[in-house]
Image 1: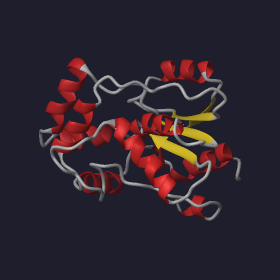
Image 2 (image 1 turned 90 degrees about the horizontal axis):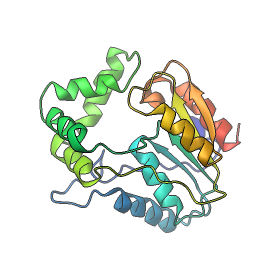
Image 3 (image 1 turned 30 degrees about the vertical axis):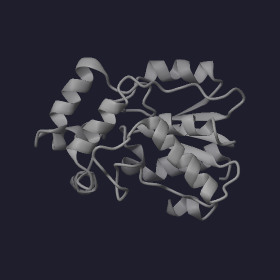
Image 4 (image 1 turned 45 degrees about the vertical axis):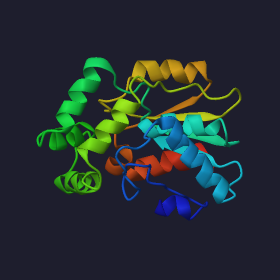
Length: 210
């Protein structure tokens, strides 16, 4: 954020249910609604043709939001190609509600995380709850990464050691949509935390503002 904000107006929002945003139960945590939040924020700030950057599940949100915003470019970091469903969804929800799950899941999102980095993630994750995370997953079961509108520039940033994403599917997605695919070395799913310098470099390159 610090490096990017020196070159362009840079805005990061906490999605509903995440970080410091509200977390009501019951609540609407569908990705379509989260995409509307992005669109409404951009409109409220009078942003014209913004660049949209989405990480993991946020990649689906970014693409959906681009349907209503004339985005200059969409950058998808470690994009989720499909939200969990069936047995995978059930197992994840059950694991989220166990004490050990709160420690196992974050570790899977990195390649070689330091103790300090994991402790930071544990603290940030504690801002929400397993009930909210489970609700997000259940309300979006099986939702797939949509194709962008024709002629929309898309860049995929793929970590070398990401254990979450389906790399083969994403390679096909990139080919189908004439997207640029860049690889992030020595990093897992949460590459922006694990390899911030490398991700920043690739983001600036993708944005064309190096």
